[in-house]
Image (cartoon, rainbow, N blue to C red; front, side):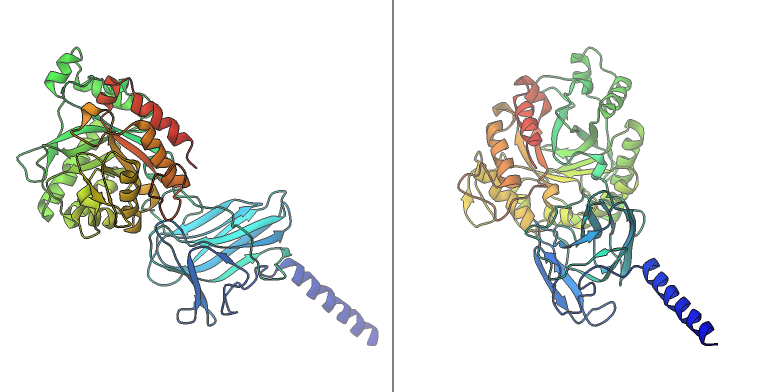
Length: 487
């Protein structure tokens, strides 16, 4: 009996050891923030540990993004190479991300819902033994909560509070409205556009600038905004027809050729959107009925011509509620690229209709190309007055949009491509590049320097491609080269 007992005891020890090696423990330090601090984590922005909203235990992480920071909290651990791991966390908030970088690169995210949600992903490490686990929110979104972060697999947790000198950059691309609660891949840019873009307006009329077929637009332009759709007799509705005078000047440019040209430039990687409004535009969307009319007519143009989305360039006032309703319908109907071109006065305060609209549709908004011309002097975000035609005018006013809640990837400069293209506010393309460098890198600034660098700063827009063509594409060639040098 004593021998049998010894064998059983030995088996028990062996089985216990086998269980321990098969079910690896959580190798993260302070995974539930139960120390009452962020010990073990390195956080950017504003973060704290709270005791009022824990998923489990008595504490959770609360981190607040800003217009220039995603409030990332990260932790570096030692892992085994070429080994399978599982990572999970409970989160609460809008656009919360969980991911890894280093030995493996993967993330998952949620657009947000009521209460706690669990994010999880599985991955296999590479040859490196260093892995960074991170959580973060999204630019300008409210504070998010996180708790019970679990990294399941063999490895070595930090022996002391982990404080890497600089967390690995893990900023994802711009989120769009996802169709599921979570996804294990990085959400795409709106319309699958590059990180930095140049937008230009193609004139569907002849005003003295060089006339162009759509397929003649160079690939330096990532987004081509067709100017403009026309108002109809139905409130809110729009239509589009090639201008007969333009068609004649281009040797009989037909509607069929125009549609084929849209496919041609899209095959080259460019996006084509229909612009609504302009200086003489009279479209008004001020109630539910006109919002539906507007959305349905734009969706019809998308279906007929293959446009990738819509640009809002209304200069006679805007109703944020009903235009927002219309834009969401257009986005759901296939308009993946949503842009706006407000005047400077429209974006001086978050109380303005355009600013409210941009914030209301922030989750589907591609970019705001504010018109930094035909403006005169305006206040910058520091309260100083800046005059159009200067680098400070561009950077000081862009700062207002970022501090007001837009993400950096949703802000771009809108400028005339030549002195002939606007009544005032033209400045050299080299000035535009300097201003982009100032916003994205904190370099080449004039007297005003933004409070932070915004590497996601989106780029530039110009009125118009036709005036740029008349000037030998001096704007596009210089600015597109500058975009390539941004982070």
